[in-house]
Length: 82
View 1 (cartoon, rainbow, N blue to C red):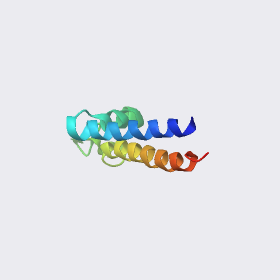
View 2: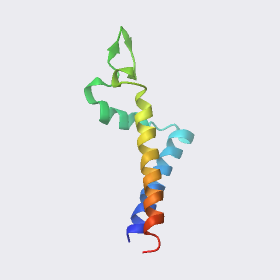
View 3: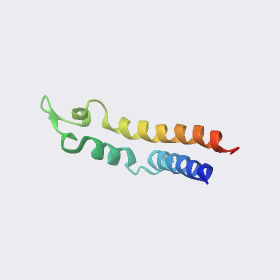
View 4: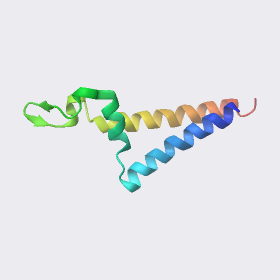
């Protein structure tokens, strides 16, 4: 049961990455909007951009999805034999 949950999370994460890369749906932008909230796309030094979140906000989304993928794979392999 636990193995199936982690495999599903890993598959979901990988699917979101593929959707963003190949179909152009802004998954990471949506995650960045949730994380940065009001500071997303605010002007910094007169230039409007996502740098107001600290760095390229789309990176938050990709890092989050990759983190979910890696943790899911590790936990799925650790619970596979139990």
